[in-house]
Image 1 (cartoon, helix red, strand yellow):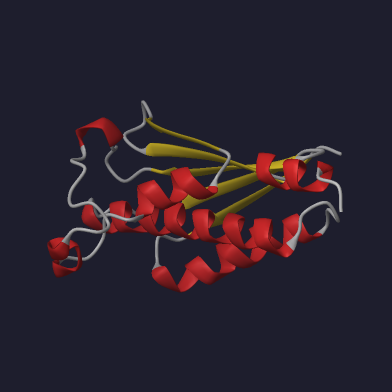
Image 2: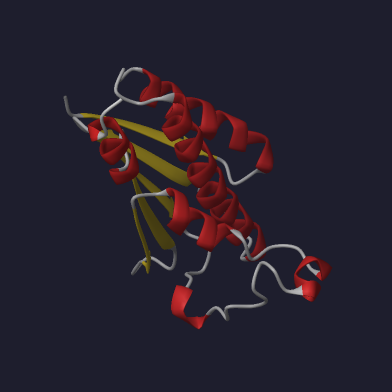
Length: 153
């Protein structure tokens, strides 16, 4: 199976739930994707799309955010593309660690680490058009799932 779904949304928070709905509905077509992996997918797409919308707002971009979902045999590859001024993930400071006492004194900062921990693959790169591409891959089964299935009962 190899199918592509593309969604183009205005850079407004009201459209975030639509992006989550479309991507998770696409994942549910494949019976290999369990509820836990679909929830991981929903969360990483939500984080990437939120970041894209916020970038558009900051840079007053009138362009739409593009969400492309490629359904493969054992994975879903999602591309979230914005034209919100570009972003260099290496230029972002690490900030406070999650367990630091001062961590909750400011909002934000969890999105990138969350995407990296829940997606099987993640890649962020600035585009030549002045935006950012976030590529996320969520596999139907994680390495842990596979190991758990091989254990004797």
